[in-house]
Each structure stands twice: as C-alpha cells, then as structure tokens.
Amino acid sequence: MVVQATMKSRTKVEETLLPRPRNESTDGSSPGERLLFYDEIPPWQKDNEYLLSGYRPTSNSWLLSFQSVLQWHNETINIHTHVAGSFIFALFPIHFYHTYYQHVAGAVAIDAVLFTIYFLGVSVCFACSATCHLIWNHSPALASLGNQLDYCGIVLLMWSASLASIHFAFTCDPWLRGIHWLFVSASGFGCIVFTLNPKFINPAFRTARATMYASLGLFAALFVLHSIYLYGFENQQKRLSLGWMIAMATSNLVGAAFYASRYPEISHPYKFDMIGASHQLFHVFILIAGLVHYKGLVAAFLEVRGPEHIC
Image 1 (cartoon, rainbow, N blue to C red):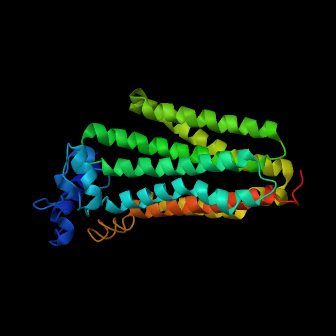
Image 2: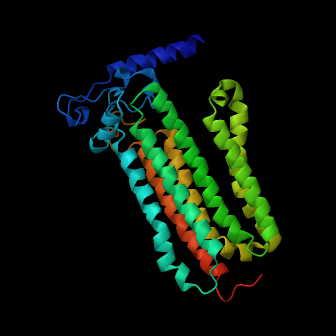
C-alpha cells in the first residue's frame, strides 16, 4: 500500500512538473475560450491521464457542445472520423444495390435486407460514438449517457455484422442459420439491457457484465468454427471470405492495441493530444475494419449467389 501510494504521489508530481507548451493547441476556437489541461478538468471528464491538454471546458449547454464540432480540441478527430464513417455507411445500401445486387441473377431479397441491417448497424454505431465524444464535456449525466450510447452502438455493430456472415455461412442449412441468429441476437439483447440499466453499472455486476459481452463475442465467432466443422474449410473459405474476415479482425485488433496501450501519448507527452492519439487511431482502424467487412460480405454474396455454387 505504501509503495502504491508513493507511485501515485510521484505520478502526480511528475504531471505537475511537465512543462506546459504555450502554443495554439491550448487555445479554443471561440474568442476568449481557452482549452484546458488534464489537471484542470473535473474528475467525471477524465478518461486518459496521458492526454494532457486540449480539453473543452464543461459546457452545461447542448448548443455549446454541438458548436464545438467545428472547433479544434482533443476530441475533434474522434468526432469527425465517426461522423464521416456514419455518413458513408448510411449511403452504402444505395451503393450495394446499384453496384452488386441488381446485377446478380441469383440474389434474393433477404440478401439486401441483411446488407442493409449491417450498413445501418455500423452507421448507428459510429453516430453513437461521435455523439458520445461530442457531449462528453456537457455534464456528468450526459457524459454517462454518451458512454451508454457508445457501448450500445458497439453491440449493434457486432450483432449486425454477424447476421450477414451467418446468413452466408449456413446458406445450405436455414435451420442452423436460424439457431445462430437466435444465439447472437439473444446475447446482443442481453448486452443492451445490461448497458442501459443503471442497476447493472454497479461494481457488484462487473462479472455479469463481462460474461454478457464475452458471450456476444463468443457467439459471433462460434458460427465460423461450427460451419467449418460441418462443411469443411475449403467451402467456408469462400462462403465466409475468410481472408477478408481475418483482415477485418486484424484491423480491429490493431485498433484495440492502440486503445489499450494508450500509445503514442503515453511515451510522448503533449505531442499527440490533438491529433494522432491512441483513441483517434482506434477510431480509424475500426472504420477500416467496417469497410473491409463490407468487402468480405460482397465477396461472400458473389460466391454464394454465383452460378457455380452448390450445397
């Protein structure tokens, strides 16, 4: 306990001793408004102790928080990457229909429905993420709400991405396809309930929360192994576009590695507060993963609905 307290004290001292840069990055975009340093913001707004500057003052105003979308601060890149991603995926149903769906003779309506569910799931996820970062400086209550929206968006993305992949993985077995849809949907619904119910935010439910989110990830991956076991690797490599799926997973893992390690800001104080921080890189890699998964779903669609495919 003494060692731990000493380390905390030393960290606190080191933070105060770090020279504060005096440059444009510490000035707000609005006249007379100054962005804050980490030790100046309230505890509820603190999330990453290695981002030392560029924080917006507490607004207590929807208008001021939304106006900050056009200002330069340490959430600007986080907001804009996922606003752009949300807009792109909202337009993808049109792209898929005109570029692929109407040109494939074997296409069926459920294909278009599941692609649209995926696109809207990703679009809503990114919109929730952007909203979370946008209102983070409003108040403790809205910061908490934004956090809940962010987690719900992640669940929605995982669920919507799984549905289409399960559809193609079990294209020759509708009954098993329905079973896997049920597992993923039930797990996703449970995660949403846990996320939105304030009771389950209590530390006493930490294990239950972890179990729910782990189950969603498990069911989202289990169908891949199950389908390979039933139909063989060669068939499922095409039906699932496993190469693209691996690329998607790799992009997600790289993004998660930046997020968890908090690199590069952990090693370079102040240099990446505004642009290039770990959470910003995480956003970029998640966006790339979403695009890669779309490419993989298209390849699976063309394979399964192609003239040479047989069950």
